[in-house]
Image (cartoon, rainbow, N blue to C red):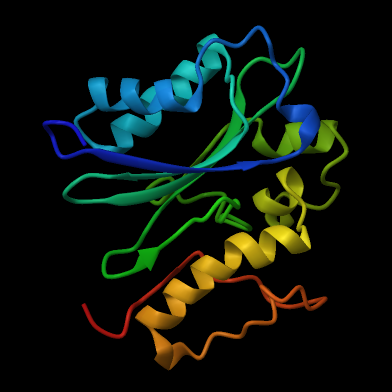
Amino acid sequence: MNEHQVSIGETTWGGREELRDDSTAVVDYGSLMFLGLQRAKTAREAIAVMTDLVTKYGYYSEGESFSIADPNEAWIMDMVGKGKGNKGAVWVARRIPDGYIAGHANYPRIHRFPLNDKTNTLYASDLISFARSKGYFKGSDEEFDFAEAYYPIEYGALRACEARVYAMFNRAAPSLKLSMDYVKGVPGAEVLPIWIKPDKK
């Protein structure tokens, strides 16, 4: 947290192996966090600083989920590099609605997202086109799922990572009676919501 009460946290999730190797990149996720805190007065400014830096200098890390907040807003951002020969990173950030909570535990949390809501959703201009160029995605833009494209579901990740988010959500809002099917790896199960409204403060 900096003197403007901008705070940043992270969890690492790896992602597709071929996207982790950019030996020409300069900025890793830890440096991004420090530079964001050094230069930003708001969460939105921190997102801009971090994403501009990886565009200019390259991203030397695996996939990451970041929590980025200030006294007025909280965001979750998923980011992964483009691999050897492709400078920069692909990323998407979503503003957590007031009164809601979100969590991430070493697995990307953003699946589908609105494409035309700049107030609450920000993303790299080539996020979807890059996935298409790599053969990760073939549908319409509206069907794009960040987590599925850049880190396809693995049973171990569901049980070790998404299960922790489920446990927190279930404790905060037992009234939702969230299904465990997704974290159990049941085929066709609905993914966990990116955020929930807790039953009480």
